[in-house]
Amino acid sequence: MATTRRVTDSSAPSKRWYATGRRKEATARVYLSQGTGAIMVNNRAISEYLRRQTLEMLVNEPFVAIERAGQFDVKATVAGGGLSGQAGAIRHGIARALTAFDLELRPALKSAGLLTRDPRAKERKKYGRVAARARFQFSKR
Image (cartoon, rainbow, N blue to C red; front, side, top):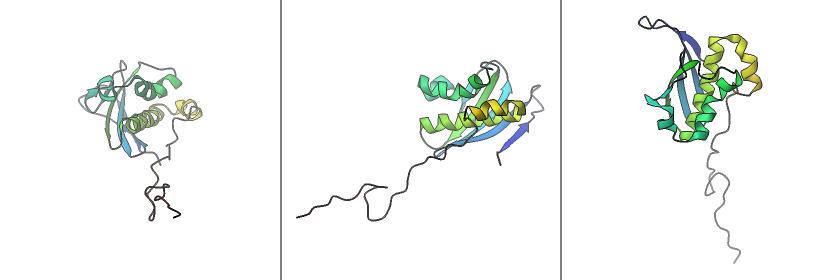
């Protein structure tokens, strides 16, 4: 089952919602709270961390799907994989955290395909081959 839970901090007046997102080898722990739309990834601004506009758009997709862009603050800790996989993991975590915030948002996120964990990963190398599918060079003579 999805790892989602409500996190309450005694020092903070507002509530936070937590979820884990995964993509390829990347794992993101996402904390969501109501706010101004600031997204922090590993204690850095999202534009500074991801460095590509397309990846920022990918991360903001769940908010666009529910038409609530700029209403939530996100604090994410992500490890493993590359930038693209990490952006996908953050997106997955945000979508799961939004369902923990309000269960009525689930149909909109589900129809946009944001709650499904992308199962694609690197195929393993096979013995007797150079890589997963590439073969060693063959010489007939």
